[in-house]
Length: 129
Image (tube, rainbow, N blue to C red; front, side, top):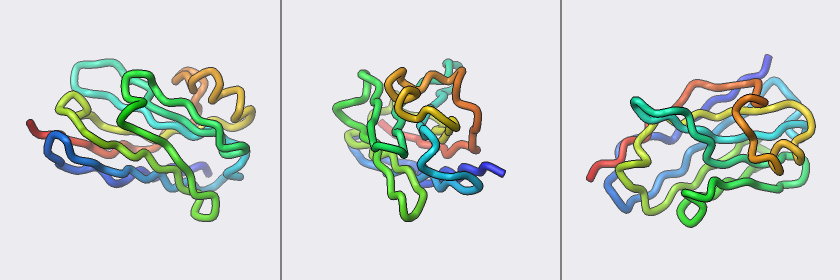
């Protein structure tokens, strides 16, 4: 069974940093594209970043690429989302997601939500002004 466990959310002041972690289990890590989405109250879900576990290629949403980065630790089967210079508009529930197969092509396409077939429970990030 595929499981994605997100953690690392919390309350932070504007300008602060957080690192979210997504621990993956139940599947062969290198066969997947793993990504981060977020959903703020009253807004649509938004893709933030994703990474191909097969070759390390990444996609970062243009709106956050100067503040956020994605990385992975293959040994720990964990994907991280480093978030810096946080703003109140970053407040949202952040979800970890994964897609089996074609990880490089999935990342190249920006990991659209319609193809991501495994979703974990989210972790709440609140940025105070």
